[in-house]
Length: 253
Image 1 (cartoon, rainbow, N blue to C red):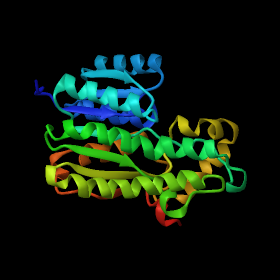
Image 2: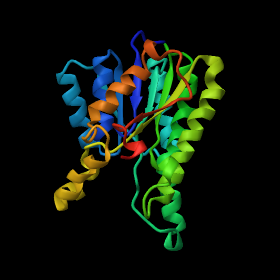
Image 3: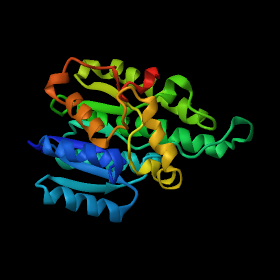
């Protein structure tokens, strides 16, 4: 039976940007399903949201595992009879490696984390998005999709270029069902992702703001606010777009 509540799934939502996105969508009135691979952190994050009056639950699975993604998203969709928003937040650098010494395993792992995950989750969600209200998929690309990333991040950049293209391809494929597909491209966001350099080389971390027009690093809430807009009625005529959230960083100064 189709639920009357709007349902949002946010992958990789037990911390960083993903958690702030889940919190914002929860405050916007969605019932949010947080995905992650750390069940303890998932339970803690859900408790935090519930304490703020947000309807939330945790669903643990690895976004690179095709069977796990398919079965769990199907389970969520069948429980509620609908999915209104899928936010493919999970992803990451996966480490650094130059091409000459790059192992096939490393290559496949980075591609799986950033690109396969989007395909698996989107494919599984489509039947339930068709039952949603203003249904939408949000993906995450990166400046690295255009500039190919820094030393050792070439496959990360390649995977994110794939996300840019699959976003537009999904938008074309799903437009007839009224399902919109857009992407965000966050710049340097102050999250635990940068924890190591922040603690070992704070001066380097602080200097990153010098390359951003607006003179500061982004905060997870900056990304969450844009995603809140993209899933809303106000963005109902937007699809196949990529929104830069980087304080002008992409242009350089």
